[in-house]
Length: 147
Ligand code: DQA
Image (cartoon, rainbow, N blue to C red; front, side, top):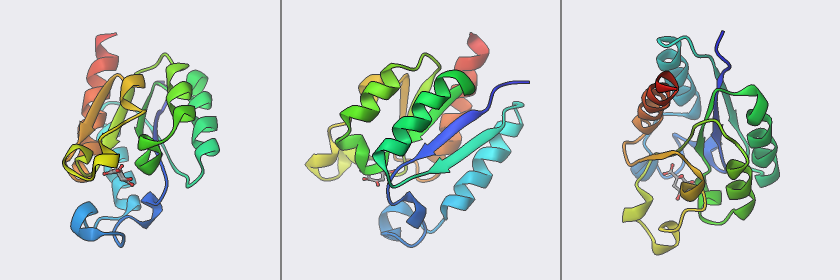
């Protein structure tokens, strides 16, 4: 049995569907979770899907993934642009790590152009709406199957 894929979501993503729908769309985080589970099951992976508004909790989960996960898909949301702690935690993990964004931060405000997650990640998927998560699962499975 494969270890699960951790899909970690940062601050305010619990509000997906009602928060700035013109940017993030009308699907909820639970819709995203269902989509991830469905896609991962095609490849015999389970999903451990979590959301937190707290930086330290995300750091704890990344550390946990060192032993317990096949890989990490992370939308660190606003912490993407601020968190050295999340960067350092990701650096400590040797499984594949995919940075995900619903929007494309590069086309938005300049404070979103810096990512502390990207330099600690294997790959980045952004700007496909919630389908970014789907593409990240397809991508991480390709990486895992190549190992
Ligand atoms: C986001 C982009 C971030 O800049 C923002 O802070 C978010 C969501 C995205 O998925 O597009 O909360 O990570």
